[in-house]
Image 1 (tube, rainbow, N blue to C red):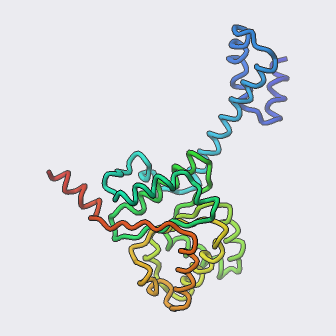
Image 2 (image 1 turned 180 degrees about the vertical axis):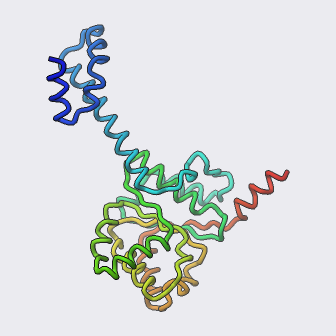
Image 3 (image 1 turned 135 degrees about the vertical axis):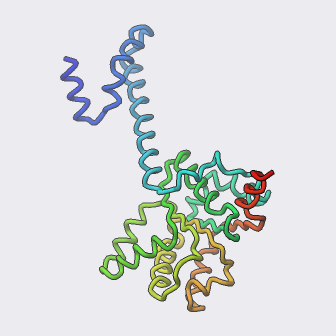
Length: 247
């Protein structure tokens, strides 16, 4: 009878029911549970397990570097303005508004770490789908897709992510083809899905990325229309940490 029950549960893909069946039966016997309570407790275990599995899958596909976590982010090194904005962004409301997060500052200020940690927390708290990528890598993939006449499908595959984190947008090699596919990505997500972007170049220098002034203006206009701008204008965190180690 047990084997037949297990086979039925396997067919229904209720794996956690199977693993929890015996332990839950003992609890039910001791507590005098009704059939309804017994089924409800098994269902709660199944739901929790599926949430854990989904979170694990989302974390894996996010490609967020493992060192970028909330716990390893030293918020004392951030400005009070950035700390306050970060606390608000952790609520995830900007995603429903298809708003963007733009982090500006010289290298070593913690931009990538903060955006990565924010993305990880959104996955853990809300099961939001996030994709972290150096900008030059996603541009390379989109260029290949364009050459293979598959750019539309490549954009559709990226559309499954609620948030895309484009790290170091200022390091794109800046050829015209690269500029075009990057602009296509920004335009495709405009007012539909969120972007988080880190850049060591302020907007006034984005003509180095997009070459053409009109394209630069159009890209910037789309990004800032709905956005939170974070300025990382303090000393290099890496330099400060090195100084602490020496002391």
